[in-house]
Amino acid sequence: MLYLKLLIASVLVFWLVVANQLDFWAISESLFSSGHFFLAVVLVLGFAAQVVRWAQILAVHNIKIAFKDITRVFLIGQFFFMTSLGMAGGEVARGYYIKTYAGKNSVAAISTVFVDRLLGLYTFTFLGTLAFFTIWLQTDPPTGVLQMGVVAILLFIAISTFFLLYYMPKIRNRVLRYMPDLWQAKLSGIFTHSDRNLAQLPRLFIVSIASNIIMIAVFKLACGLLNSQISWQAAFLITPLVILANSLPISFGGIGVGEATAQALLTQIGVDNGAVIMLFIRVTQWLTILPLGAYFYMVETKKSV
Image (cartoon, rainbow, N blue to C red; front, side):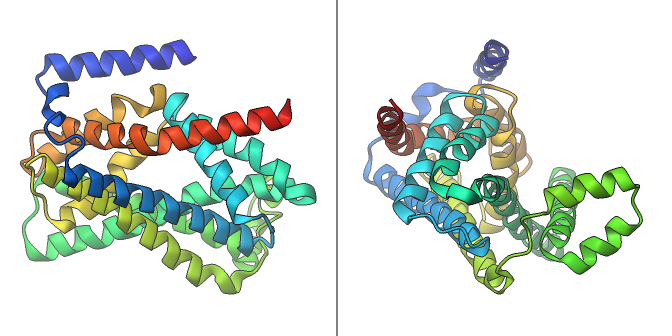
């Protein structure tokens, strides 16, 4: 499977280069500039906000783990996300390492990894949906923008339904009542650890929104550094879809998939270097987050020997 994903990544990158949509030298002038340093700082802040979000989710589920340990495990997950099977590899790594710090709450702690990822996507689609309606009210959007808006809305509705079932027992029980007994048993098992400290949910939503806005700002800053100006509405609509595509377990670390998606979506608003922009962000992640994740992975490996 790993070799297949490496092959897919190689084919996608080769296709983008042959199609003159990906020029590796196009990012050379912006690398290590003052603007790139600022971009790197904002990117690190965005990942720090994601750590805070995960810590908040653990608190909602009454799982007490030191913040430094949550940070360590999160960065290990990012290391595997960037160097293996994409989101799948990163989430498996997070689940594996967080259980060692959760004690008797290991099952619930592992479930928060999935909730964290889904919450990030949920608030991204929330922001994307708001941006789409703003664009729709102000202009007559092209077909490509309409399609992006429909995808954002459908994702928002689907994930909203999940969270209603996950955190609202009364609604969940009413829905399960109309399902076959086997389904009821399986879904009840999935939602076993969901009835927790719900008073913290509004704060959790705000933290997730903040972390998403920072990552959207990273995308917009990267566009500006590579001489492609886009509106905030476009950044709010496109960034979630690019991140979602990059997270799919299709290629090695999402390489090629993220670039191809960014190219296709940004072309819809007249920007022709979307693949280069995504590559620039990816390289910045490799220079900042990847070394930290590798360091903490080696520390954890030595502890287990």
